[in-house]
Amino acid sequence: MKMEIHKNLEEKMNKTINALKDELASIRAGRANPAMLDRIVVEYYGSPTPIKQIAAITAPEPRIISIQPYDGSALSSIEKAILQSDLGVNPSNDGKLIRIIVPQLTEERRKELTKVAKKTSEDAKVVLRNERRNANDRLKKMQKDNEITEDELKTAQDEVQKITDKFIKMVDELTEKKEKDIMEV
Image (tube, rainbow, N blue to C red; front, top):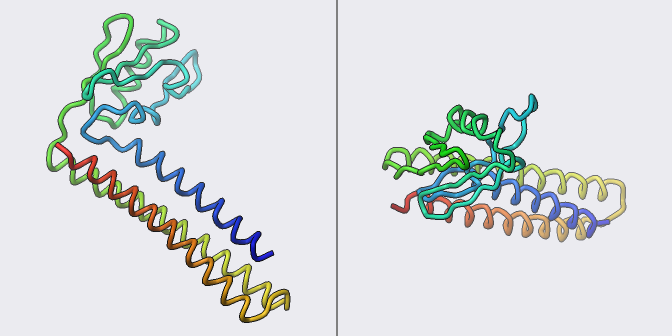
């Protein structure tokens, strides 16, 4: 049962790390990154559709994102969705594909994005700590129900803490990497 709690904890924490990776990928750094467009939803035949489902998105050069819709009629709605997004970029439409030139970030904007990355990672840490608390609560309940001894409880809680520390370290590493990415000129 203790092992099950630890395994369950690791699974939940892995999901949190994956969510953090996705969230950090969508934060714009100095380079063009197709993941920047992941949150953009396009009005396509009357229904909101994620941009990556209706177009091929590539970064042929470090500062350019190329968007080629599978259906040419979606070109204008993709362009409109990008303009309405919070990316702060101007798409150029040549009739077949859309190019986005990612401008150089200002120092002020870099610092702002770094703060966003830190906040995102702090949110992930809160989730990890909540998972730790839940696991410890389950262990305490097991001890209260005489399923495990006090020594086993202590050992299991130490293991929960080790798992939590490992994942918090991963969050810190991911955040540090993203901050370097953002601050890179």
